[in-house]
Length: 384
Image 1: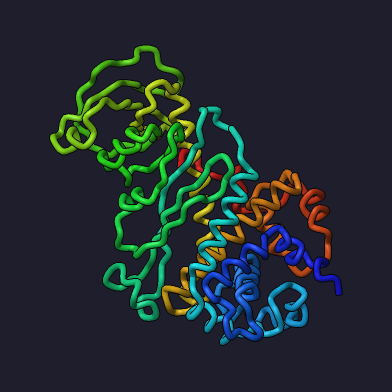
Image 2 (image 1 turned 120 degrees about the vertical axis):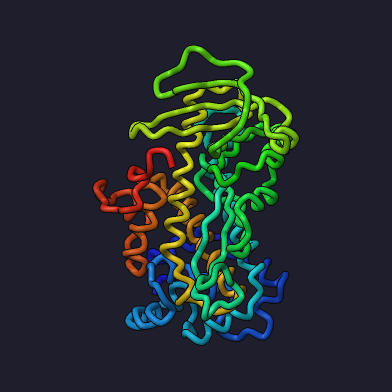
């Protein structure tokens, strides 16, 4: 049987197995392993996530008719619930973390574009909380009867891939995630209003970067000057100084404040240090945040960790990194095949035919243009 005949096996060829094996050797991941290797583990996780099975039990049951294909799919001949659970709980999550970062870096470099034409990269930073069953994951205590972890993510809005993914306990406030961002001079960083920390925002300005953040209410300030001629949908555009002692101490320089209303007549207030941008460009940067929300939506729909891959924090991290690797692999495939389908359409299309023998290029480039996909980018929010 031709190993590359199945759609999933064709997709996996876009990953660098040599780099993965080098990382495995670095952490002795396959030491004393005879059958179910780290590579088998990664592909099994990715296969389960791409097919959207909500639990390990259901994945094993649903996969029974195709178990004879597992070897050709790259998962080996020893895919069992106990093998997978043991591997997820005992193997070093850093193997999968490093490979996820490697794959994300390849995807970002390959898909680099200059959509906004601002002279620097454009990122959105946000976090998502993944709910966990507290009775199973006692280490992930969040609230009285709720468990969870938080994934802080820096998302390249032009290449549409995550570049930083920092996992913490859900109790950690979102704003603390800003400390892991490696700010690049000349780049733009878009935040929601949970990130109104003026000390951290001032640091962004000091390193030569730009930010756009949705302002919290109430915000106390004084006007320095106004812009009189407003483009459509812009209510006001002014330069301000903060007046509250702590805020003024944390951000002692001027800020730009923009009031904008969208097509649904909702009013948004933005703060930015990008004084020379057009007000509509600032609003458009914030509007593009919906791409990171779409990424979070896909990842959470395909994780379901509370019933899926194990009970330890190590197992949870491994599944998250495997999901990010799967997403970035598809981003690479979408670029390399030159398909007109979006990343999410490729994910949904491939998930239905992973064990089919259709050539990948034919599958993606000759697909029906009217694919029914609830994750279609065109259904994204207007400003979120």
